Amino acid sequence: MTAVEQYLKPEIIRQIARLDLRAQFIVKGFLQGLHASPFHGFSVEFSEHRKYTAGDNPDDIDWLVYAKTDKYYVKKFEAETNLTGYLVMDLSASMGYSHKQELTKFEYSICLAAALCYLMIHQNDPVGLITFGEKIVDSLAPKSKRQQIGNILSMLAKLKPQSKTNIGQSLNQLAAMLKHSSLVMLFSDLLADPDEVIASLRRLRHGGHDVILFHVLDQAEVDFPFEGLVELHDPESNETLEVDADAYRSEYLEEIGKFRLRYERECRQIGIDYVPLDTSMQFDRALTEYLVNRRNWG
Image (cartoon, rainbow, N blue to C red; front, side):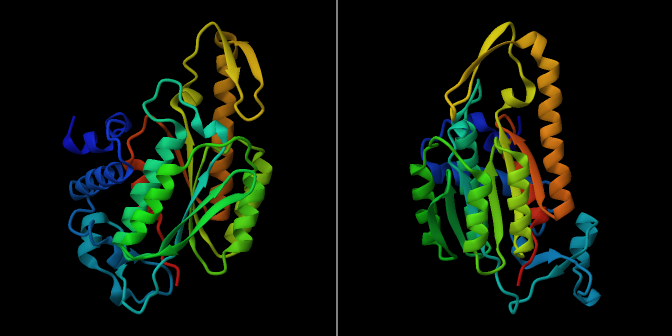
């Protein structure tokens, strides 16, 4: 195992008690990994570049970065405004689930959000925090000062999964709250009616917001490793269902595959970055997705 992998494995992160140290550990491993990748040479200064888009002056393309990444990036100028980001956390009871993983879906999301907070403040981008259950519960206004890291991490560390959630209603409420184009980083298991959630995501995009959807599931929810008769418990409705896991497995795997594929297709269609994750995955996949897909909004 490389040193970088150790920094980024959920089971290693679990051994670190404090959230600020967890976040620093993840970010350190992530940036070390970038130095070993084609991003080497500008990873720590990626705030100074953004993807080339139609209408940009070709003279502004950084050919050194192109030579390393085979992608077009332009240098970001001081006149360009910073991106305002919101970490948006699903507080549903189902987020507290873990089968055999070191971190629950909620703990995994909290660690990822904390690391993204560090990255955004590093880029001098204002970042805030929104939490929701059946509606928005708490909000912390975006700031780019370094003390904002402490404010956000303190709030994240105190969060606990609650009971019921209404993702669609909460996202509609968020869309009505946001007055300026922002980057919305949503962390959820999306265990709700997809029609309502997708409609609310579409509303966010129509409001001019960039959205990265981190779809966090437990590894057992993706792989269904159960055998024999098992009881499946819904923490939100408190209902329990006994099923023959061996007979149910193929049907379940087909359904969860369709569920994720639908979100992937719908998000691609409306211009949302969809990041399917499970709690056994190293954190670099999600962080790299953020870096690659982050767009400049001015």
